[in-house]
Length: 205
Image (tube, rainbow, N blue to C red; front, top):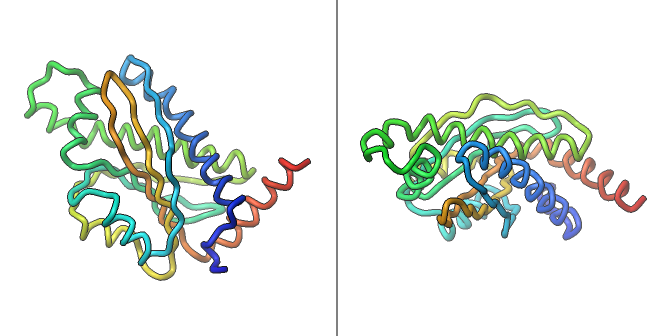
């Protein structure tokens, strides 16, 4: 088994932690938009860079908008929150209000996506750190808008593995879909799996 290939139990833990993280984010997101937001994680995939590129081609649209931030600690790498390019303005509109004209919403897109990314990415990273009794430190999020070639650069190389997480958003009568991609330095995979094993052991009592 490669360092990034987790057992079924280990992958269940990763999925559980992602669900906990986006659940925490939903409460902050609800306050931001002034309405109930439901976030869920229907799918988590673990892959190497080549497999992730294929998964991106199957799952992620040609053009995406979102934010990235680097993190370090027990695991080191880059986290990205991705939205289909044409849907990102819809999400921004839900956050800042229906009444602004399209050009003003476009001007606020990067700032608003950065705020959304900060909420969701930091909630997930904090949940992982708390559950695994470790520390993760993240940079400030940076907005981006890219085609699929930009995503390929984001995926890193053979020295990384990727956690691709689908998130379903339900807010203000909208149903949107986004993705989280955690591009993790392969050299930290063993420590990550060790922490997950300890978490599972503690659960077993």
